[in-house]
Length: 185
Ligand code: 5GP
Ligand code: MG
Image 1: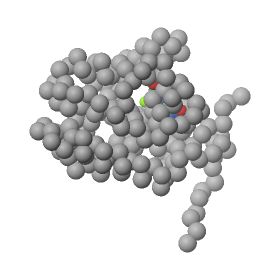
Image 2 (image 1 turned 60 degrees about the vertical axis):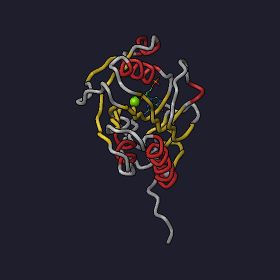
Image 3 (image 1 turned 90 degrees about the vertical axis):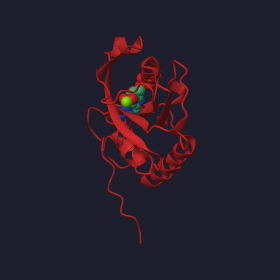
């Protein structure tokens, strides 16, 4: 049976990562996470960074066999100038008290590294047992600060991508694949 692929939106250049490749990689990452945390006594607290991580989180946790709790935070990067200085602001904190727990930050994409660097530092300061990161996409060419990533989905080139939780001005967030945008003129 041939697969029916809906036409790509006009502002998208190409599909970078298709649904099957995503599903396979997410289940591999979950297996790595299950293995790594198999002996922990307290449930692992997964903290998703809204909004971009919500689909990755949903797929990932449905493969987990270890005890775990799902939580989210919302942050905002300051405007362009602020973002260049690496400023990050917490808009909504976790519901869980992270102190004394193993924490896994679940993030859609690693770009400059500012967001994850801020979160890792902030969570460590709360007396967590450990803070690690699961990141669906990585743009190695864009890094400004070194960030230690334990669980990484795919490396991609320096292009703007959408789908699988990632948006462009709230567009394309719920596409089931990762696509490259055509840059605006
Ligand atoms: P960082 O703090 O590492 O510079 O930026 C990470 C954030 O930038 C991500 O969580 C995401 O919100 C945004 N971002 C970076 N690159 C892309 C991209 O290609 N597409 C989308 N939709 N968001 C991106
Ligand atoms: Mg994000």
